[in-house]
Image 1 (cartoon, rainbow, N blue to C red):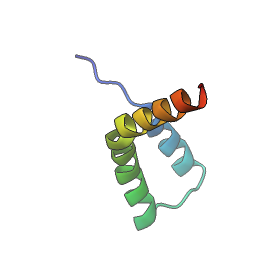
Image 2 (image 1 turned 180 degrees about the horizontal axis):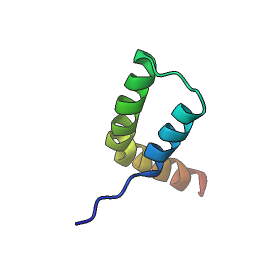
Image 3 (image 1 turned 30 degrees about the vertical axis):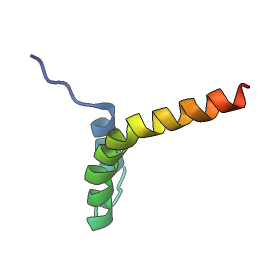
Length: 57
């Protein structure tokens, strides 16, 4: 299986090339926010579906 780079990877590379700084906060955001969002995506999807179905009545 061929492994490709994600869009987020290329955005990070571009920001570094443009002179962005990388500190502890940047690393935490880069490696924690994505997996956390992926973990809670099914919960948020169900919440949105419930809200939309109640609003459609």
